[in-house]
Image (cartoon, rainbow, N blue to C red; front, side, top):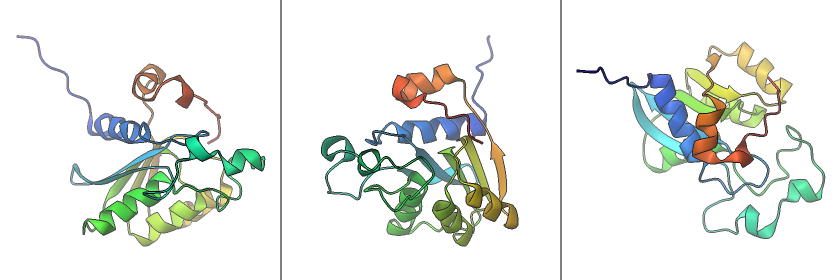
Length: 171
């Protein structure tokens, strides 16, 4: 009998983060997040505008119109970040996330990093880099463990599509 090869926990949860990202309607970057404790999912999130508002792929991207570079002026966006939506989902559903891990397809920005720190998440596992030096500095000052874990591009492409594979090369 052939042994069935199961994915590692990192593969499993990062795949879930990419699956969450596939729900995003952002025209610039699709990001997903999964908050986990004791290998149980507490909440998920993806980037996009608040519930019951017009999606960016319908109304257009303010950041594109204003030529705002990635990693700058995050307040100039209709959307919330995946990490923010996951933290909000946990709060709305009464799931405490203290002591949890967050799997995210893109390294958190400085705003999300601050929220993750104050939510007492203990580990961030991310796949792609993001150009936010302040986020990296602040996380270095925290006790949060941070590590990179990537899935093969072919696997990501099958979950999200060609659009997502815009690799920026930023760490």
